[in-house]
Image 1 (cartoon, rainbow, N blue to C red):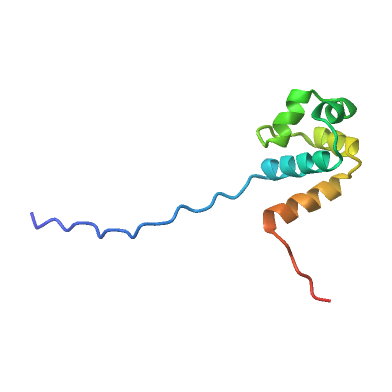
Image 2: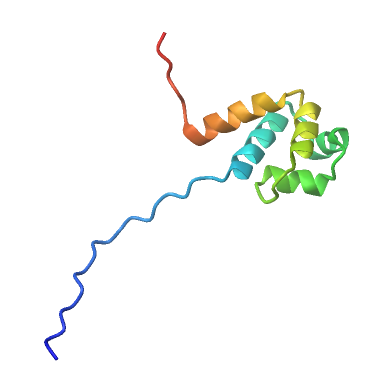
Length: 100
């Protein structure tokens, strides 16, 4: 048996910043819109036909909302699903500059 060669030490790695999940970004967009409209969680939940608890968990990114729930909540906020998707994309990717 020969001499054991130790593994080279690895440089300390910085922990990678965790990317937000789509449900977290969507919830943040929904909450921001609701607050911008100065509406209560209860009001929006009632108009969307979902429980206040469920909407709260969706806004906090803890629950994955179905497309039906997202459509109902965006409708209650006066948004369309494509607008929600665009805002979530912007939140996930940051600002984008387009050249003319």
